Image (tube, rainbow, N blue to C red; front, side):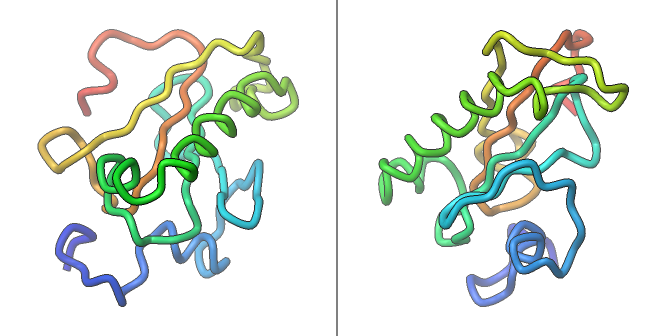
Length: 133
């Protein structure tokens, strides 16, 4: 069963990371959010910022249901992008200065594969077309 077809009672891969059932390179955690490095990066730095609740499938549901949590996600992405200890690539090169891309994929045809709202925080140069995969 895909994440899109799963019911609210079935944990998503992100809920399983929150529960420490699946390992992740966690770079930030609060009572409401967790951030970790993407296992299939699309940029030199690729973090995911994920609410600990799986109540929202995508950013539209989150914006409607909990705009404060959405704002916290954006603020966290900004904070992480300014932290040279976190915002570095796999070779340890820093991508600092606060510049980043913040991407929310909404829907399967837009590239969303996990239906638990999450933000992609990307830093460094991108190759043309890499976000379409």
